[in-house]
Image 1 (cartoon, helix red, strand yellow):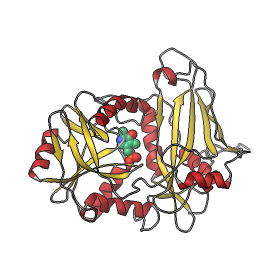
Image 2 (cartoon, rainbow, N blue to C red):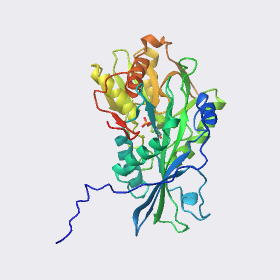
Image 3 (cartoon, rainbow, N blue to C red):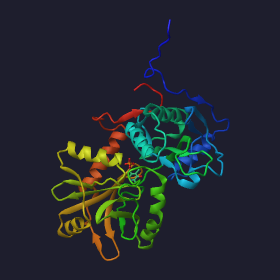
Image 4 (spheres, protein in one colour):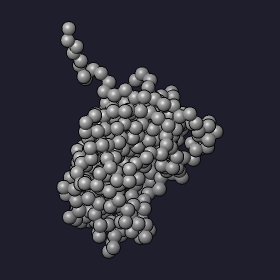
Length: 372
Ligand SMILES: *Cc1c(COP(=O)(O)O)cnc(C)c1O
């Protein structure tokens, strides 16, 4: 009798689970969760999976959070062959823990991998890795306000080799970091610096991939933004608006149309896509197209553009009050939060994420190991 195995039916990888022998005490964890900030503290565990050209994906593990050892010749340290993702886990009032559209993060991770010549992690392994980690570190997902557990999957070339080619050995990790409410004292609209001297990405480059190099390219212009009293930097390409260093840009016209720049060098945000969908559900027109700086300047001056906001997983929506560049400043009218479309969409989206509103699009995915 021959043995036939339907590969789609078996879990592609089994995770070995090694509980942390010295996890943070309840008191220590409570102290951290009381004021987590962003990205400063990490949970007791992490996921680690290895890939090699010969062995494929192997050695999947949930293990104690800790330092990793790399050969100084590891390719990532020299040629930046690296990608990452960012998403959150939210605790609902009934205690269950959910993430938001993680299938989209899994697919984007595969697209990023293709561009960076890294192996594509199967989407089910991506999703399983989130569930395994959150299940193990469930005590770190607190409830209340806009608190969440930020999940950071990432992959990099670990092969020790200085020749320039795609690495044959790769590491995948997921780490998790508790995150507090983004807006503590209510919404604070931000000022944006328009970078004219620097770009973050180019046509045909890596702008559409979530890779560390794009962030490295944005740090100097970000410093320039701070020097001009701005919070964030907005990048242009050929006179067209692109996006911020780590958030997408959306404009709102006076007839309630949402307009967002489209180009092959913009990172396609899942937050932006979700907000545009919610706006469309309400009957708003949504446009994804090239937007020139001139269109934006004229629209803001004439009152045709009434709102602008940045959006991404961390802040969800960040209203923009002011755009500054070397030779002009555009002030947007001050809109009370109750009248702002951006803030109303933000509320609707977070209500879905925290289980306070119906999830009509089936966007939530349970990650605490419980039944859906
Ligand atoms: C991650 C990211 C965003 C936002 O994407 P979300 O999926 O909404 O979090 C936008 N721009 C850049 C450059 C990013 O890296």
